[in-house]
Length: 67
Image (cartoon, rainbow, N blue to C red):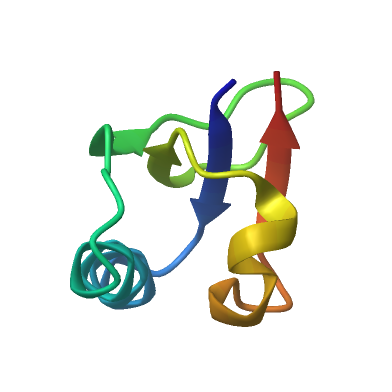
């Protein structure tokens, strides 16, 4: 499973990635994502940790998907 979190602000994405690492969680990647027809531009943070386990760390404005 992968949880993908997209944030519009680079600083927020870095803070989230750092918070995940501080917990000992793996951060699979942090990268800029170009906006598309149905998706806004932003910064992607991916982790194998379930959304429910890190919900308190995810900013309210984030776009989150799991698969």
